[in-house]
Image (cartoon, rainbow, N blue to C red):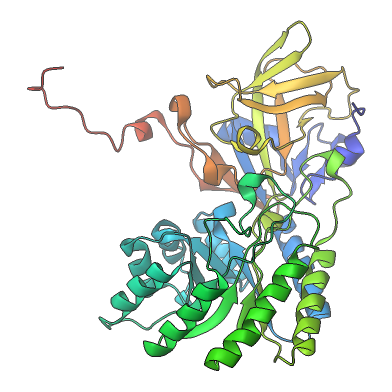
Length: 450
């Protein structure tokens, strides 16, 4: 076990994070906002999103693409990482495309004022309502399978709506190094089409005059080595050659998905840069096009986690500290219900006290929540200072796949979220209250025999 290294732990926090040593507040602050004050005003658990960190990360992507790509490119924010009205507005104002899985995310984006030209409808096993929402709201539809394509064509034949561009999702038979639950490109994946199915889909689009413009694949999420993307890009380009020879069609857009990882724990540092990922994709794609005498397509990357994860911080209040035979347990007021990732994927996080974070460590701690599951452990064996009930702990890198996967398990109320920028904190998602938990329920009729 490594020692408590505050300097390395702060490298996981948003770019605007300051401490007592450099702020004079006695507490952690983000974007000039005192975290202790925010917790007192809004309660805990509390999620914070730092706009400056998101903007800086987005600029890293744009600068790397501008330097690496001789052609045109797009960035699509994957809304499944975290989506609310404010996030959709940020995406719109930054000129990104927005990847929406299903009609629910499309409805959020539309309510936020995102125009259809910026909306990409994604998802596997889209139902009729999802396809209808894509037809009415999205500028691009990523088609996962042949039955879906046939259903969309039937819906589109009724007229009345401009058709979105169509991309075909492929299954390259390649997996990135990631947890098995976050791999999506392997041969037995539930996602995407085989080469034979893709060829049939291109012919179907020709026959039904559907606007097919792109090819898409996604290998998985939270990977840090781009090398497996090489064989997948070769697969896609070889298929492009086949499709051109067989049908005369080639893609205007190629999307190799997203999934670039982030450092969640100080042991993950240093994490390979966004630039190294972008350079690998661009170089391999354009060199592959040159070798096959293909016109370079427009590149579209789909970052979600890597755009927002570091921008997010979760604040928890310590309720109980207990010592068992071999462990110091720090029990906080959130966990499995607002962050299921440790239970689902064995995800590792770090944490630091909001007050006097520079205190020396008092040994390892296990940070767990209040829920009736032994898997409700946020962090294991993390060196931490001695903390007391009532103190606040900050868990960095909490911006992705936490609130979007949160539940009401054990009657938990989902946390509030604040948007930090220019020294101000704006409430962008209110905390659920107990009345929300019964808002969808209907009681049994009194005449029923219970």
